[in-house]
Image 1: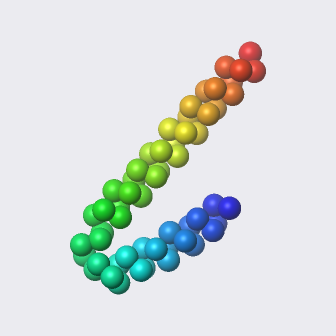
Image 2: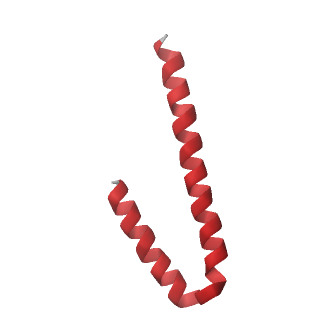
Length: 55
């Protein structure tokens, strides 16, 4: 599933770069950083919850 997300992300980046050129780069990078941070937080708290339930 993650492979498809990468492919979709690359395609979206190409489309955004062609439509908005330089103006779309900053919002695109901020959104990508938000996705990465959200995924990291989700993984951390998910593992924390699972470890606390198993005790």
